[in-house]
Length: 147
Ligand code: ZN
Image (cartoon, rainbow, N blue to C red; front, side, top):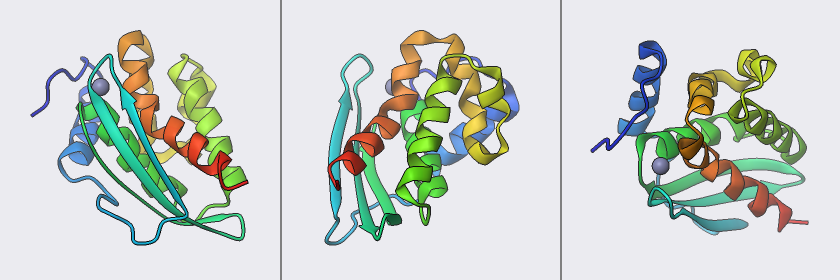
């Protein structure tokens, strides 16, 4: 069920719904080094992010969650993007995504962001920005705890 996808560019909307219906890396990760649960009470979104972090690299990232298409598509795209990347690089991408959600046009054009650029239009809907950032907030908090 998709409650309320904002009226974004239709091509982008398709990509968001595609991730929402067929999320990447969804499921429980055995013996995670990082396990973070986050909620977005304004929308009712929930995500649970689990990661293996070895030698400063995100070796694996999986999630379970429920909520609106924006929140679930964002974390699906995020796990796809950060898996196999150094933690520092993943945090750089998190910062870039946050800039995109604040309307930064350069961030929205950054090819490193991959499918996540489809969420750039969410910046026009301040209430939904929290949905898009939920998975990223879990990532930032999670890797912060690995030291
Ligand atoms: Zn939401």
